[in-house]
Structures are given as structure tokens and as C-alpha cells.
Image 1: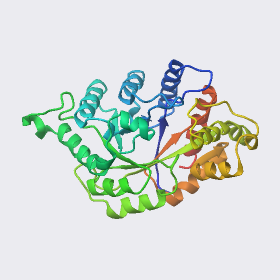
Image 2: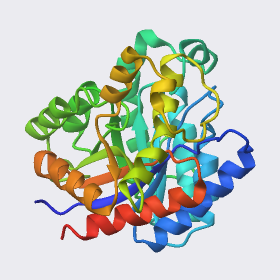
Image 3: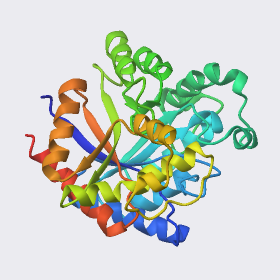
Image 4: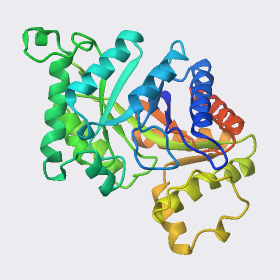
Length: 332
């Protein structure tokens, strides 16, 4: 089995009965905790117009987390690039890298991170997204390059800085792009598992070495919920299940507390839909988590596994990441 790194995806989840201030403090606590456990990186994802997710001002939150930690890499998983000016993102991440040298990652996606109406409010033009996204990535590479020092438009800070860029995807489209550009590829298996097999295959088979990367680098994001005993983990996982039901129902309210019986909440059709979307969710005690990750890695051979954990109780969430790290360490 191929060795892999392990990292954290945090959506800054807002919980029922808690404030957004509480959410940000929990995110910092989680970053400190996982840093002490030697997780590789801590990423935050851009979403908008969702009561359940508070990471809309992603660059600001990255700065908050980086300032409160010492060594863990902090970045975006991702910035939804067509929502922004390439120059503004270059300046923001140039500022972050200048403040926290050698610790900032820039993960880039093309999705809006929200609904259609909010996407319009963000100024997106869906007719040109497929052309705009690749062009913006090239613009970012130009702004970060030393060679841009003679250009009329420059990113200050940003110019000449080595900020790793990752292409994010939840379908096969970005796999082709990441392969063509020779950039690392991160797949959102935590909510879009259907095309992950094909996306990895496309990326690996069509990868073109670049000055940024000489061979394919694959990162898979999955859900992970661990408990001291299996029953506890499955109980805690009902928060995640309820959250996905709310997405299906277009109800974006904050994350709920766990419940004893999901059958009192979801219909048979909703259950089928949720379980399909959460196919790559590792739930159980340490031994069960280790076995699930082992089976996943033997099939997909990823370079890095990023864990997203929607657990209502913050202390249980911290413990879950500790158990998952022990489980992965036991594999090597």
C-alpha cells in the first residue's frame, strides 16, 4: 500500500445553538489540535449564502488560522476562482504567504460554492466559466512569477513567491485541466463520489510534467467520523446525515445535534441519496477506520487523504481526528 499524508478540511461549520464566533474559535482549536497530531495541512473552503457554513471570506479565515498555529500548512480547499479577480486572489495569497512564509496553499475550484441566485450576486457569468477558469489559473501563475516584474500590472505582495497551487474537482472536467497544466489534483470525494474513479484515471493517464510538478499528485477528500466504540461513531455520524438531508431539501440551517434513529428523519429515497453521496465516509472505531482507509488506499493509491468531519460536539470532533490519526499511523 502506498504511503500517504493525512490532512484536514474544515468548512467552519455553524452548529445549532452556537454563534459564528464559536465556529471560528472551534476551527482554530481544531487547527491547533491537528497540528499537534502532525496532520499535514488545514484547508478551508469557500461557500456562500449558507447558514451552516461560515467560511465565505476564505482568505481572511486562512489568515486567522495561520496566525494561531505554528507549522501546519493552511490554505484553501478551495477558492472558487471565477467568483474573484485573479489579481485580487494573487494579492491576498501573496499577503498570506508573506505573513506566514512556506505555510500557505492555494486550492482552486470553478464551482460557485452556492446557489444560482447568489452566484449572480457574486458577478459570475456561467457562459464563460469553462474558458475563464483555465485563463485565470494562468493569470495567477503569471502574477506569482518573477518574470512579471516588468509588466504593467503586478501582484504586490505575490510576485516571486512560491505558493503551491492545486486544482480542485468534483467531476472529470478539472481532472483534464490539472493533467494538462501539470498541477496537483484534489477531488471532493466527501460529497461527490460518483466520478472519482474516472477523474483519477484521466488525471494520471494524461498528466503532463511541468515546472511545478514532475509526476501526478492526487489528494482525495473524504468524510471521517471516529469514536472510541463503533456505536458512538455511528451516533455522531447522524449530524452529517441530517446535514445532507437538509441539502437535498434546500434547507441550509445550521448543523444539528446527533439523533438516535435516522429513520425518524429521512424517507427511503432520501436515505438512498444520502448514502450514495456519502459513499466515501469512514465511520467507526479505530480498528474499523483503519480497515476502511486501508481498503480505500489499496484501490485509489492517493498521495494524500484529507478528512472532513461534521461532528456536533467539538470535543468529540477533536477526539475523532485523534483516533483517525492513530488509525492511519497503524497502517505503516
